[in-house]
Image 1 (cartoon, one colour):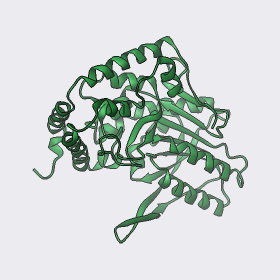
Image 2 (cartoon, helix red, strand yellow):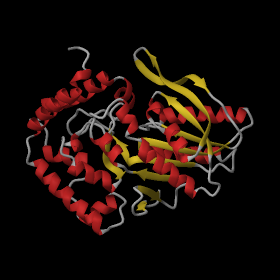
Image 3 (cartoon, rainbow, N blue to C red):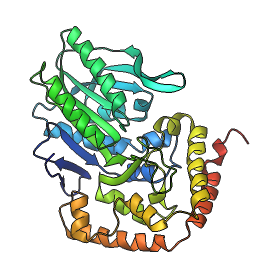
Image 4 (cartoon, rainbow, N blue to C red):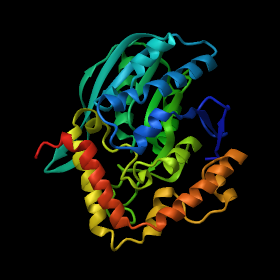
Length: 359
């Protein structure tokens, strides 16, 4: 893949990730609501949904304005249950986009002898139409669920003699989405040459997933999102640095389990506290600076190296964020990881302990 550059129109909070090799378009939208959502696991339930409304509307308005045909009609595919977290129907209504139909599909793990052997579409209610503009919202980590559901959805369209014009995708997601969408677009164009591809909008950044258990040994590979190799909205970096409630940089994942966070808050609370308890248990053994470097996505780096790592075009505003980030990291490294964990557990108990079911 050719070098990538993050480009923004000032004042929009909307970025384009540009590369000569892309078949699709990839964007990042940033907003105070989604910054707060991803910095604080305390944002749960309906609040986790409402935090996404404003940036989703803004992104749709921009994409609609850029569309030569000014699309004003679309279908929504909801992949249960993560897709229910995304306010795409509400955003369409407020952007003047008529939603013709909402299709539903579930993708569940196939487990044999206690081992996950694959995925299967267990439930579907799908409507199609000619030249369909499809809008989807879902979390993408490995991309396996999305790939299976989309292939199934495309097959249904083909069987009925219908086609898909383009797919607008909103996600809290990672870099694996790009490779998967590029591959799918190339495949779809073999039978629908006029397929315009994906317009994929990432909230706050295009993150990466852990490939191992990390410096601390307590992260979950292929599930937990991190910053190393990610492309982040500068506003999100600045929010993390200035966020005073807790050391958000050290959280296990930027989203945790999206479904539990919205619908089973007791399980979400358990996951978050289990992480901080596990981190507390190894706090005395962890090289704290290495842990911080892992979470920040880099160790020592000059401003120019930092910009290159993050696909940024150097600017005065970015230099300010870089300098603030270096100060933040240095100050954090002087703190006690054990004390941070203890304070964090107290905060979680105070803010989310009411959801605990085993009191």
